[in-house]
Amino acid sequence: MFKGKRHVPFITLSEISPRVWITLSGCNFNCLGCFSIAKDIVGKPMTVKELVKLVEDSSRSYYGDLPKEIIITGGEPTLNKKYLKKLISSLRSSQIIIESNGYLLDDKYVDELIKAGLDGIMLDLKAFDEKIHKKYTGFSNKRILRNLKNICKKDINLIIKTIYIPGWVEEKEIKNIARFLSKLNPEIEYRINPYRPIKNFSREPTYSEMLNAYKIAKKYLKNVFLSKSCRRETLPKKKIKTWITVFPDGKMKRRSLNDYRKNNMKVFNKQEHS
Ligand code: SF4
Figure 1: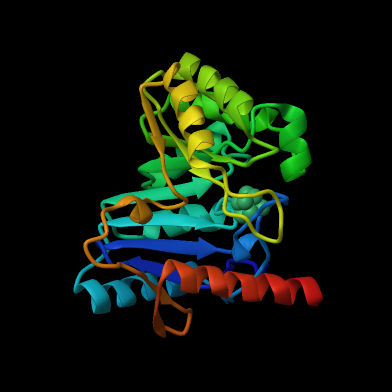
Figure 2: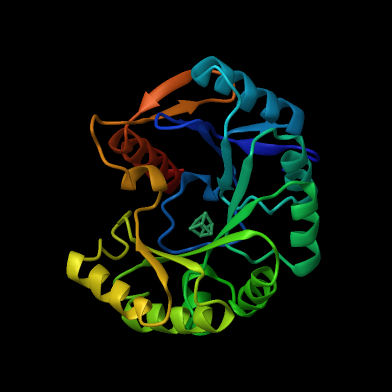
């Protein structure tokens, strides 16, 4: 990674509301079932200034205004701590949120991010059992659970997400996570997402498996949601809404969820054969 730069494959504009996702590539984890092409270093190295310009220019051109919400995702956005802090303090939006695996979100750093302007954290808690977590991601979850306890004490919006992965993260894991979270704050928002199969790793959970997981988590937590990997998918479809992908050179392309998945598969296949 270049000093002062992070690789950006694209940013994404929602067609529903002025919401922008910034994808920063590269990740410290190596999840066996990862479905993000941004786990690896892909895209163009960009300074914070260049990236903010891309966000603001494309948002103005598409919405006629700056975005109301910005979600910084990846890959893992905290990989370059200084970069993320600078990015948050340079972006102009009423809501700035990061999606993170939580590993690098220690107490001091979270305080710095809040000071820089961070409004919310969506933390992916992959598994509660340390052995499963280590086998799936390559890392212990002890640090993440510690970080999570600290974040809960702060004045910041927090959403915890777990992906239901048949054969890996099922009812028992969901129950243990929900019980752990209930001790921190029973009102915490907890989302359970179904796994999206890629490269024959596991399968998509059935409706009844998801419903069971929901009922189990509900015994411990007030705010449990079954959702998909992204909030836009949960909205009613009066007409089919899609995403607008904006590449680092400013080119825009309208992509449906299927287009996005097809494109990911092409990249995965290329990575496997290179
Ligand atoms: S933390 Fe997310 S991006 Fe990183 S390897 Fe795991 S699933 Fe992929």
